[in-house]
Image (cartoon, rainbow, N blue to C red):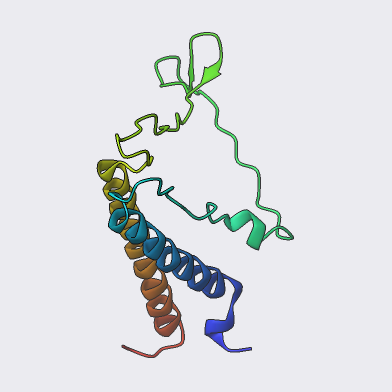
Length: 135
């Protein structure tokens, strides 16, 4: 097994391929935004947990050591939630594509792809350094 065949690198490669496929679908959504009756498509969210379901991550918990430290809960113990934005706007032509939402998805997808690419490159650099090879 080569160093780049490690599970971390193959997962990052899969993640980058997922972003490439998603970018294509989002571009189709933008291109067809004016077509009557067109329904936008998106990929199911990529999940690293599916990829590494056999590996158990260590459990890390936090504790408040000083009374003035910030807490991760609000009031009665309810934690912060990630509210999903739902597209309620239907354009007059009958499709559900909002260009602003699609462009936000495109930008987010691009930034996530760049982060995965950067992580991949830095990981390769670390391995080269550990092996005593300079890039």
